[in-house]
Length: 625
Image (cartoon, rainbow, N blue to C red; front, side):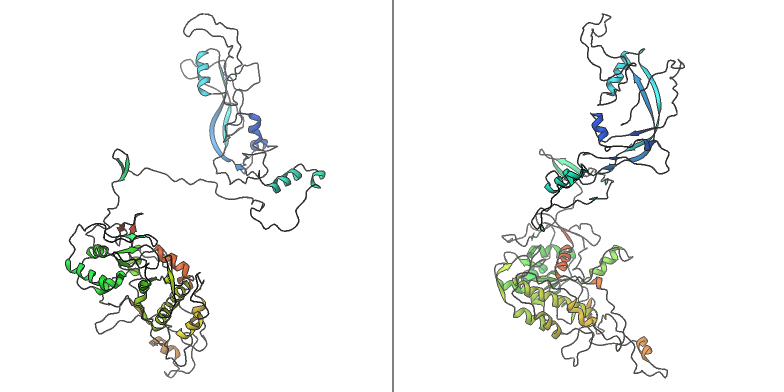
């Protein structure tokens, strides 16, 4: 408490049968709780500024006042903290005890005190002096209580008044700017703060513009506006137990490790040659035989391609374990998330470039933006391959499947993209972070073309090469070829391609001569072979009954006057403009929805987000685009 007053005990303590009664005078007393330990009263008062106005705290104002406090009052750039006015119901007491003489006698005896040494009493006060002992931590409660017990008939207590207003400092201090090593600010403070004309005339500024490092700038008025600390409520996990002589902490409810394969970093050597351990459940021999045959025919596969190539009805838990028994995976890099045959390192030979993977994420679907449960959003993004479509892992430039987001170079059959890949120059050493055996310029162009084509297919705006003349509002390979021709293939740095210029043909639609076109069409074959989850390009406008009525005249015939086309149906927020941002987003969402530990072990996760047991049938297929 910063403000103190002298108090005394009344002469008549009141009724002897009960507690003494004290009269509390009607005085307005305001207390200030200093956040520091005040050992020197003058230095403590200096923290309130050169001329603190404490009288305003006693005024009856409708608006509560605050008291600023500087921890470094000698530094003009120091930021103060502001007090918070709190209502209290405290009583200020004045306690007077006899002054110590310094003489001593044996405890419990009635012998006279001996000794002539006088020790100044810093703890107590006498009624004949004006010194206050409640400073510099001299009023220790334990010492005062002991003196009152030793002088039951000599001490006095007086209620000075009630403290109903208390200023407390509970907020966080702003970041402080240290200017002790700043020559400029030190010189400015030396010449400006004295407020003398002679000092002001001595200010000199260096000519020119400073462009070197560590430039001195004027600090802002405030670095942060956060004054309330966050309550983290740290608690010990009740499921943590200590085991062993070394005192290891074990989580008794931790996820069960049942990883059999390896999930390594893209720059980790050497590659694993076999699985971590043998499975604890029975894996059908027919399934392992098919997987080993696939690995002999092709050493690197995406999971979607493997599932499209095997035959038979197997449980998801068996497929999950069996895939880890035949191949390992990279956590990142050119072959990210693909299953690689044990002992094969694609980073050592350029012939493995055809198995590099490309990941795309065309739609930014944030959970919570749609008023549907998370489970339904997840099911829309992840689709199971139950329709018998064995070509969902191929990309032909005319349609694409939404049951996964990874494609391999060898599975690209689009002639335009295929020609660009086959004629691309190769690197002498493998780029482990991004483009693998291709130059970054080629890799960026391939990803951009595939991404733009997927958007055009999804919007029904992908044109055919034999269209003559080319239809406005459609995307053609000739336009893409003209756009990418200006960028070199042998580029070591990222080209910085953005998607807007490549989408320009779909935006430059003559709205005066075109009719409204459906944004996307999903066709389902009626002959038994389903294409569910396949986004295709219709290659033209299919008019519905409403469209025909919109362009029909009064006699029911179709009029030659064409209605304006509506705005483009897609939302620009659904498109990620930068390929670098797309790669970062794709890395955040693994294709397999698993948790991985620091040592590369996998923790499988089911559709509900919880860890799956080995017999769990909640295997999720590849994320949708």
